[in-house]
Amino acid sequence: MNMLTKFGQISRSPGDPKVIRSGPSSLGEPDRLARRLGWFSIALGVVELAAAKRIARALGMRGKESLIRAFGAREVSCGILSLSVDKQTGLWSRVAGDGLDIATLLWALRPGNPKRDNVGLALAMVIGVTLVDILGAQSVSARHARGRAKPRDFGARSGFPHGVNAARDLARTEFHTPPNTP
Image 1: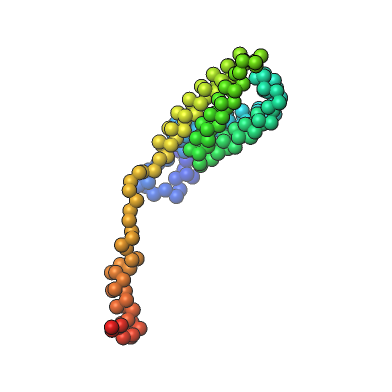
Image 2: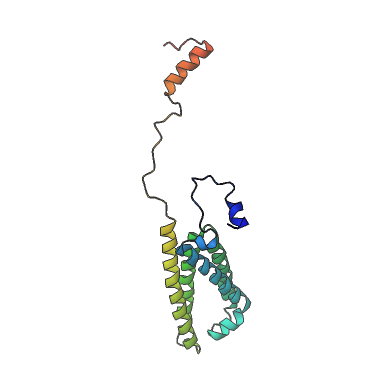
């Protein structure tokens, strides 16, 4: 047994289960997919922020550079959220953003656009990524879903173990106050 393994067992009782693996590799597959999609989103967003003019030119969308930069900022924020503990929100926001991307690309597919072939290719890629995003969001949502049990009703509880009247009686006897008589 090496020193690190021995050191890791100092605070453990003999009956405790042994930790075989921990760290990022112990994440479930949906969480690993969310992490990959988060980094992909950040990288794509940085490209959209940095190369908005080139993207607009390649898609025949000159004059829409600020829109592409806004989409880049959205991608970065969705990516950061997908890497956080609130990965469900991040992934579903990616799906919503994909819808905006598809709508924008459909607009760019208009007959007067000389770069329609590029737009068609971009549209096919966005649809493919959208399917991966939907699968990722659904799997993370299923993995981290809370039970849908009916919430308990504690309205009849007073917080006193023997009831409110027993507590009042006890208070009267301890403070020697006469009971309320009508």
